Image (spheres, rainbow, N blue to C red):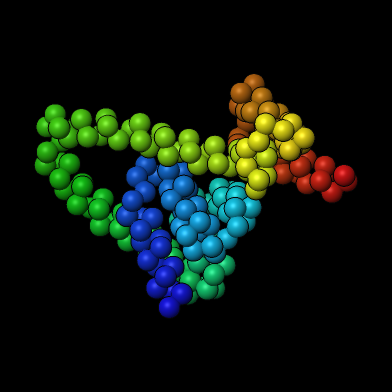
Length: 187
């Protein structure tokens, strides 16, 4: 039963996630944390961190990771297939339609209309992760004592390094992890 539940949850996410892996994160969070209660918000944030660092699309990595956590290897297979099946069917149909009608004004209008929604979904996922990193599971508050200043400083430092020297992001992620781990280990 849990395998079908995993398949169905990730089937729904795959069906309605438009705009790539980052845009799917709010949908994954809603299913995995809010509806099914398979992970806490902190575990979900850790999942996103791991899924972002590992090779492959973040949403598929997330589906595989959640499936493994809930039901082992079979869970990973069911969750991953559940996630990739709808987009495979939809993109195949859309490719046929697009190549047949790509010059129509309405098709271009639809694509233009989808862009702001995709940006909003990515921004929502990013904002959720920032709020969790800075304020924890309690969420946003105006109390400065609730702010995790180490996370804020690491974020600002990583952003500065990325803008100033434009290194490979993997090095910035690894460096931030090492510095953050050392700070938390010794404090």
